[in-house]
Length: 229
Image (cartoon, rainbow, N blue to C red; front, side, top):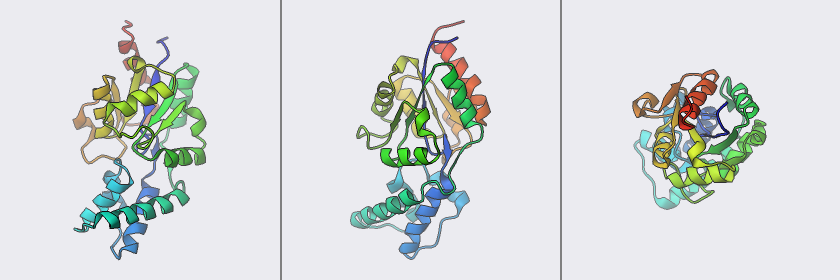
């Protein structure tokens, strides 16, 4: 058995399929501005850089720009609506809980490192009965930096009680690969998340297409990381 590791997960598009509720909240804000809704299929890849960026991308899709004050107001409206409707349709990806059970049984630590606000992340995971599985849940506001800044990864691992040299990132997009590279740790990419650049093109150390494949992918990286043969 490999030594205990810390497995750090992105949230939106990696742990949980949050797109339906995020896009509903986006379209709520756009409707208030008199703009048409963004289709679900095209909006999925707008997700991943936080609420403000999601709104900016939604406005860009309509050829619109707004003042900083208007963006502040729209972001507050978005967060208020989303917080009240955070887990209406959002669900863990198939196979996730079995994978988390496997890691727990092996004695590995689990953590969440997301560009979502910490309190929204905890609210979502609470409502899905997943919070108890993670030693740390850290968001864009937890340490004052976002992925791909490696500080957020290092501090998340520390809060979980682990060591960076024995940790792995799991994510679906550029910020996840970027934070792993900058922190000097391996990264597993998931192909079912939200990204405007296909995750395979970002060359993660392992690429999986279903959560059932995560334990084997992580195990191979842990073995290499620990210098085991």
